[in-house]
Amino acid sequence: MNRIMIRAGLIASTLGLLTIGIGGGYWWGQRHADAHAEVSQPAVPAPQERQVLYWYDPMVPDQHFDQPGKSPFMDMQLVPRYADQAATASVRIDPGVQQNVGIRTAVVEVGQLTDPVRATATLTWDLRRESVVSARVDAIITQLHVKAPFESVRRGQPLATVLAPAWSSAIAEAQTLEEADSAAAKSLHTAAMQRLRLLGLSDTRLGRDGSVVLLAPSDGVVREVLVREGQAVAADMPLFRVNGTATVWLEAAIPQASVGGIGPGTKVEATVSAMPGRRFAGEVEALLPQIEPTSRTQWARIVLNNPDGRLVPGMFAELTLQSAGAEQVPLIPADALIATGDDSRVIVMRSDGGFEPVRVRTGRSGGGRIEILEGLQGGEHIVTSGQFLIDSEASLSGALQRLGAPTPAASAPPDATENRP
Image (cartoon, rainbow, N blue to C red):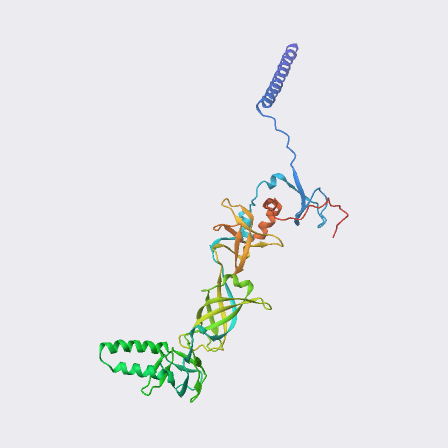
């Protein structure tokens, strides 16, 4: 019995010692591991406090406040904007968001802005093709070959036959020398014909009775017949006025704002209601140096080709002038411009995929495009659709402040009970 009890005690003592050894070993190993971890791992510094630039209402991002509080615009707390959030001047948009909102870009082209200018005008005679037929000496009209105005004539066609005593001797001398065969007579005949030209008989035909037939100087229309048969006329008195019809004039009133791109050589296309579907080509000959004070327009003299003579002075015409800029400048689509009251900018897509607002100075606009005088060089990719979303993000990120775009002045800290809508 005693032996059994002694054996049981030995067993219990052994188990106790074994338990104490296992527990002590575990405790020692855990302590050693903790100590090793304290030595091998560096201490984590305490997070630094982020610098707040301002507070804003996400629904009105352009309005900044100096202190936190409740928005005077919406029933919500103001949101801080931290300095590390405004570190770059560009804005990054998730590709998925870009696809969802339909952000599209276009390349800035360099060229001349062609802006069609439309005007109306009335056809008139081309005065550069006008000729006046007159007698340089006193004469009598013995016969009129063209008696009514607006008759068409060809060059060299007889207009009138006249008798002029001052021409008789010169004509008789020229006719006599013309019949002579000697070399000396031929030389004198040349001098006699020169005398006739000096007397104003170049565009004439000589009659055997000493009469002179006045001829049409060019193809065209006899616009005016100023004499009658049997009438005595004084020297240098006009007898006929002949106008060519190969070209006609248009004098169009151009608005002062559109004159800058128009000058001599500007191409013109005209239509007249009398000939629907037909277009007549021409060009600006000159801008007349006068501005109408009431309408603020300037007259442009336009020459239209009239090869078949169907255009008649007095017709009403509608014009399209291709106005062009004087220099090659960057051109952008009108949809790409973000214009405020005192600022204009575009959103440029950078090579790294970011978007950056760029201030620009604009020039003329037309045909859906705008001239850029400063801010772009050409070749940039600019946003043409969805730019207002990016512009809003740029305002939130502070990119517009770095751009120097005007923003509303900072307000005093709002009060929860004041300025509520």
